[in-house]
Length: 150
Image (cartoon, rainbow, N blue to C red; front, top):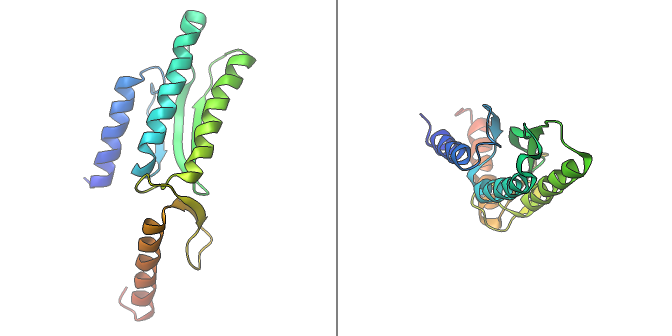
């Protein structure tokens, strides 16, 4: 199995153990390890909110999908029936961490910048070092393709 997938699986299993009300279903994930701390903090803050709600609800919203889109974290939940006020409190937490993701490198967690790569339209949030590595990798692939090595 790919090392990246094993690391991601281990991270998800840890989240399921620590936050069982949040991670009740099999979820779709598509992000890099640079955001693990961000997702951990987001999960913890939502769980604190759930503890504040106590036994107010028989079902809690659970995570349906976490992914990268336009270089930012997207955190989708399947909502149980909760009050508008509680929904707004939950949404504020999610919005806060989604906004923070535009300032955290997707790869290494260093401060990052949301921008496109060289000659590309794909937005990513990367630190200078990871952005340069990705640009070099793409230039090498382009050169290999141009010389029919791929």
